[in-house]
Image 1 (cartoon, chains in turn red, cyan):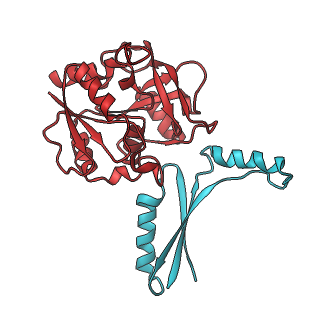
Image 2 (cartoon, rainbow over the protein chains, first blue to last red; image 1 turned 180 degrees about the horizontal axis):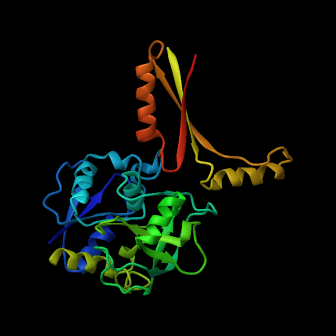
Image 3 (cartoon, rainbow over the protein chains, first blue to last red; image 1 turned 90 degrees about the vertical axis):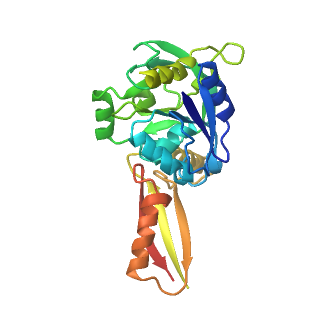
Length: 222
Length: 81
């Protein structure tokens, strides 16, 4: 079982993502943005950071990186794919997930421990959780406000494709307090907060984030 | 040589926090004329000679693919002499 972690120029959280994958008991394969080969991985994580300096729009340039062509094909074929923060932005720019992430409504860069409610445990990345479970993981972004048109929002709600919502005050103006969503098939997940920074209490506020990485292991074994 | 200008704006229904911040700063400086402000992006693309309709269509395609995100933004393409 091999999970690929992609590094774009400007990616920050690839090491923590790799550590989380290892911690969950899976082998990590590093993928470089310029690779046109997925090196036989079974699942892929697009970690957070500021790929290509967030030039143009967050994720807009990364979306056309050579590795992304292969990733888009693999995801359309059902491979589990998780985009965290900047990775979520890349998934939206690549149209693997609907909507877009825009500037936080108060304009501030946020960095704090955030409480979330898991609202779907049927995706490849959330099966270790129960619906209604509250977790605390770090949230750190400037452009984390999830926006989409009314029809898309209604579809996400009615199809149960919102995997996590912010609990308490809406930190960034996301529609319906959306923190993460999945595609129709449930293999592609985008999440704004950072589970890879909360896999043990030595380095994170909680170990609540580890479930994302153990979930994919279960999805792959199935 | 001609200049092709692509203007990109957030769709009206998408919140523009930067525009709101500018709008709030103006009256603090004594500029009281603005009812609202929206902030966008402008791309200036230089080409040799006058653009053909095919070239303009190509620019529009590029705008739709890369320069703008049609999920949240609209764009216009025009030629400036």
